[in-house]
Image (cartoon, rainbow, N blue to C red; front, side, top):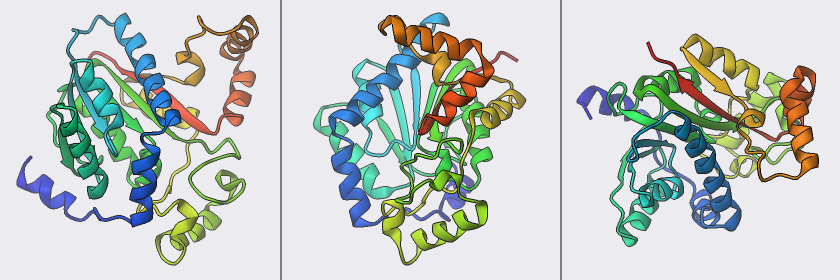
Length: 272
């Protein structure tokens, strides 16, 4: 990493609340978290097979937290690079990787200014990240920059269409008007950190799939939502029918997003 990049990243707050670290250190090892991370990897891997990547991949885990996903990819023999703005979580990631003998590059920094070369990664993963970054468009540009042509990006983030969310301990928060959201965001950063689970960087952005699809298209990336990337082979006949109906009807797809607490998007970087 160069000096300019380090200087830019020095403006970020790498500290954290004790409660936040304790919660995520424990939650990152829960069965629900492990199952969710495994599901993300399965979705990405299924798409990778279509594009005939070499077996050993360069993986960028953006906002890697305690390194759960990084370890899963490394255990499969891939070269993994993780970056995290929370220094305490990063130390846990390094410790856990060392305990199981995995060599993973973990670095402290921001998703708005990644330390890797252009077109150096086969896969970029950014779960539950861009909602917390004010300059979220800079994040998307960085993800696209480091991906090789035909590279795969996976993002999960907040969904402004659905009234249910997990970012703030407030009912129907994703539907609040912007002014009211700014009020509670300020409270969460100052006197009421409990409102946003003691996060130093609480969620400040709320997205729809349609909004992000437009952004990806302008960057030369093709994107797919949760209904497109679902594996329906192992689902019941009833579930298959529902998913196929959603895929084929724009109104049903929109209603499906209204009913989904979060967004999951897979994007492919097109060749120049």
